[in-house]
Length: 572
Picture (cartoon, rainbow, N blue to C red):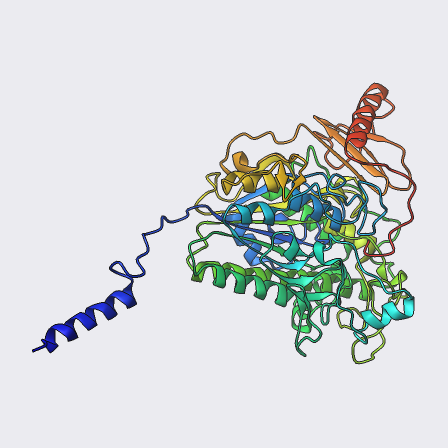
């Protein structure tokens, strides 16, 4: 007679084995925990050096201030001075010309000016994915050739969401073709924050957005969702969060603008001087080496400014955009904390260039700028400063005077090789890994191309000599890890730049620099003249000649062919 009790006991035991995974059926050996850090790079767009609280600003940025207070701030960190070149360098670990983007995203069919990440490059996502990381991106791509329609009318119909076309760039140049498992964001550079053009998920165009859509929220909420998804397994993740804020058009939510409705009525000088004072008090600025430079276009006082109401509102909208970005970063931090990932996540936050001095209303609709909303409302490009900024139906920017304030204490702004264009805030936060004193400031001289070397070291990854049959240019950056450990890290001995003829050679204590339109060289002893006030070219002609020769050697070896160029018709 069959023993039913034994059969039943055996059935229960088998079920337990199937459910729990114990026994020989579905047995999985215990996997060793991967202790490599998650890595998140958050890149702001056209953020001024002194905009956020941790760098002297009055804008309410408690989440970024938290990262700075519990991490490390860099006082000498450099970008390329404009959006897509900085992104190209950040993603590849190379100078931007070597990566194929010397100017913008138009293909000029010259090696340094292809307008996309060329075949000699690998991205951070490709390297880290090969090393076993999850990879995702949320936000602005802007390192691929842009597809245009044959006529301006057809282009505007596309921009205005009246027609559909399947591709915004060649498919092989999309983020998901360059190592990112997941991507949500825009392929192009400029967006309507309420209804962005070139918005995709993976490779699929998103044809409609909800009525309450705001792009900064969508970027950050998607990043938080990626964190929650990736935290379900044992693999570390790399997340690139490329903000559009606070790039023009300055468009912000009413409740955020309300916070700053009176803040900027104090005017350019008062805000700038208050920022400088806070920077000195925090130790970011040594007033003996970096005195506050003269205000840009100071021929007009705030009291005599006939457009002070419009200007105060414009800067309030800019501040509101930064505030909203910080709120979203707070949700990213919350997702990390709730999933138990915060302690072993390295977060970098920086800006792609200095604040923008452009008066974008002068450009008018075309190429990447819509003429009307999806519902047919006309978008106002008002150079006379009559239409208040903030809503979807206005297209404006803060202009040169507020950009100068945003870049306190430095001169000039985005697209220039002077410090106001290339000097970036950088915060590093990693509770488990940063051994430098919390809240401290490092003088290590870093550059956006340094993220590749840093990530390769921390991820125990391999930067390849070849990738998918292509020869890869050796990385040119230097790891920032010594600075994270509080070591006396010198960083780069020399850095160089060129963008639309704006150039610099920074070697040791000296900096040779020129503007885009006036290519006369100017010489500064940058180690003790950090705001570039005392031009020493007449006193040291030999040093000018020496640094110019070094710049030309760099330019020759890095696919740089400076030449007179018209301003880009796309994002400036």
